[in-house]
Amino acid sequence: MTALREGPELYAEAILEACFENRQFDPQCEVGRAPYLLALADRANLTKHLLSELLIRIPTTEDRRDRNQMVDLLVLYAGRGEEEAWNLLITIAADGDENAQDELATLNERGLIWVSENVLPSLPPQDRWRISMWLPDEEADDCTPTQTALRSLYQTFDRQRKSQVSAPESTPSPAEFLSRLSHEPPSWQASAAFAKQASESELAKAAEHFLQTKNDSALRSLSRVFRQRPYPLHLDTLLPHIDDEDRGDYVRTILGRIDDPQLREFGLTQLQRDPLPSGSLEILRKSAQADDLSSIREALDRFTSDDLYEQHQIVLDLVSLLFSHPHPEWQPLAEWLYENSPCSFCRESGVRWIGEHGSIPETIRQERRYDAEPDIRSLIAKGSGE
Image (cartoon, rainbow, N blue to C red; front, top):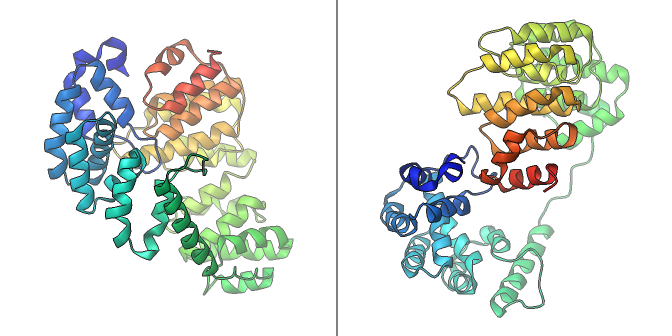
């Protein structure tokens, strides 16, 4: 972002490092950065140099995240007609790199033909779901013969797969659900059905089991229940378990569904702990009030961790808290989220919250055209009336 704003040529080394090291929090879910990075390289007059480096580095890079990003960049070069990029893609795809194979298939017809001739014949039957990744989402009138043949093959595979799917398990009665908890934790579908059908006395029995069991699957099933139905026992039965190794996380999730003055006071004391415990914001999800904003912000500003997953958990809890309180005075927390989230999805949630319930600050509006996340750029442009 800074490179685009101040001049990419001033940050050539940093741009190259970002191309070779994947800095996304979750590359499997977040939008790939290759188009953004190549645009930076183009503007910094690094286009040829970057390609030369990719040709050298890809064959020897072992880190899967870094290698996949570099392959994504190589695909863009191949799409521009760079034959050296195409040749290396073919080489690593022939060596079994599935990312390179899938990217080749969606690059152009030349790539799809190569994959259908060189990958498909040895593709195990259970992996033929990958064919759907090689094809457009919708069948168009101008499909090529290769696309038509592959779609027919995939449809045959899909029919066979669906015919082999086991019939869904019958939904247990509330009594059966309770009896299975100790030895056969029910599925999430069964948990949802129990939440809808259970009487108050059956719900109380489920809560008592939650407080006694150490079985993680049972705890997970029961926490699903209490996301949908109010926890039936007194709040004091949950609070002693807040730091419990087995059920602490599930307790905090349940507490986040409760709006109670006592819980609010308890949650505010949790914010004063150092380090800030995971789930502290989740506890206040329903019971927090606007008067608590300064306490929450102070806790966030105090929070420090080198662990990205700890950072992300705090951010996830903040997202839930914000969307439970859609009021303009909460915007400073959404801005903190935008500035501090390691995850682009959560940053996008912060921008969406501001667009729906607040007013996008000029600083964020100015940054939006430089953001690496295309959905954030789109949201801010829309919220700014551009």
